[in-house]
Image (cartoon, rainbow, N blue to C red; front, side, top):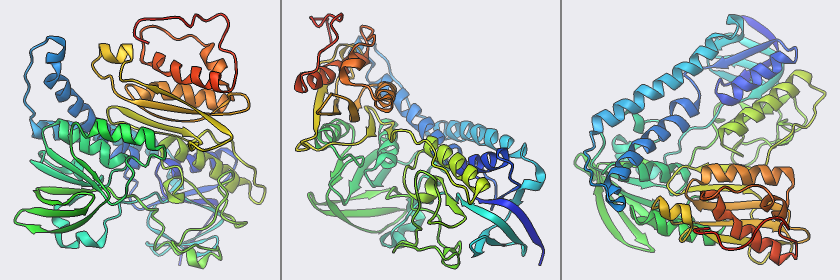
Length: 471
């Protein structure tokens, strides 16, 4: 058996793994990056980028269909084959960019094989070789979960890893799972003329913990497609499609060409031999780890990205990989990394953003400021006046601590609030910054002012609080 040695071995060449390898090598470690196929990151190949390409196509058709609101007569026809061809073409270009960056890695760093732990710092490779490292970073990512109830119709089941390979748009699609991924793809399909319905056994849409925003969001999205929460499902084959039946909060049945199963992406950790490492594992086979250092217990093992099942977004995967790589290189000296405020965006229309800590209505230590976009000026101009934002702040001084936002262009305004929270700003300090008129961002001012009022904090003395059309 050929034995390879290194300082840091990284399992997985996705966003987190690539960041971990760069970080470890930058900190003087000899590295080995092990991956089954070096096929590009989840974001580029089956996640962020192809989904946004499909969303963009749906938005284009939506704009055509609603042009009459502005006195513009327009008509359009969706060419499903052309839509999906563009999605794949542009997706492949994004993947090629990732592959180019991988190609620039030193040849001796890359190992194309499957890796399995044979001890805390020993990896057995599928090509028969063995890696002995001083420390290991687990960056194996995640994969779609398909519950057993769909076994009988698997040939008609899509996931985010297969939907973009469709040559044409289906006529009908049942979406199982009302999380961010399911809702994004469902709305895109509905806007492209696909008969679409969304189902979830839970009572929450988009994973939102703020029931007020969730209710508003549900109502807005339901204008475009049925979204049934709190339902139990049964499935059976129906010719070249699937019959889906539901009971619970509603009951019925419908035939669909395909089902998109978006019920979650669990960490890809099964079969990698964690039981041989000496780590304490929970009921799901996951090790405990420190999110500040990414270290698993006190072992020379670190974990990053979707593999740790915490903040499953690209910028967090990159940051976790950097922290894990640095600490793996310096082990046993391990230092905490600087983590940013939790921040996630759902790219439906309206956008949704969840930032920081979410306060409950009865939280005595918090105040909550609310603003609606139903009558907001710029939103009315653009005919997208629907949405609700809720800001949470410390009752003592009005310092912003979190937000749940569903509204037009929230993907942009939410960045401003995330920066304010991370900077420790109060509602007063945010209001003292410039707000241009007329913009969507002005819609946040009412929520900020109500926080100031609740905590008896001053609004900026040199800002006119009088009437401005449309704010």
